[in-house]
Length: 219
Image 1 (cartoon, one colour):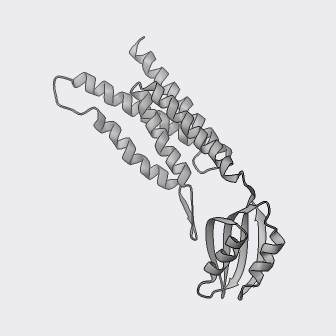
Image 2 (cartoon, one colour):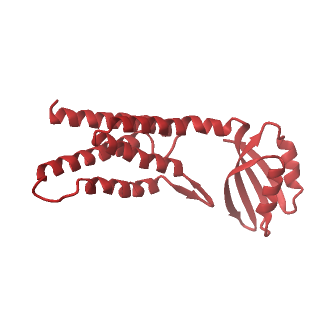
Image 3 (tube, one colour):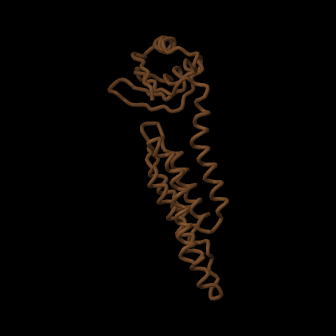
């Protein structure tokens, strides 16, 4: 097989594997989706191929390290990953997508260096982690919802709210605090067990001094 065809096959395979992971992110409407993951994987693959080819062309003439160029992908991808992380109030989103971009760059490097089995296995594991494990996390819960609570800004208020939620077995995933003049609007992203009644939770929260409104919104 010619060098050009081998390079083309590696780039095509890198785009397929990167796109496979990117499709899962795209289906969940994440900041970095199908195209971004494909581009990261192809770019990483090309850089790895260049590292190998450049080293082969100067081997015997210098002590050049063929991994130095490819190593910059690992550190450089951090800047792209940071772009997919968004902070809204005290809520941080996009960490999983940033991690998937980092892994996809590794997949591209593996394909570019000819380690196809490692690239395939990594892609499969990442896809299973992103798609299946997220369903397992929700298995024992009725739904993922946003719980919006309007309250007077008093010390320890979030702790009191968390205690009530804990009584009903509600798990808190994210907390977003928004200031509204003299009040606070605290938005919790929570998992609610099947046996927990929203009316009971609402009554329990309204019994806390300072809370003026409680509202549930489905994700």
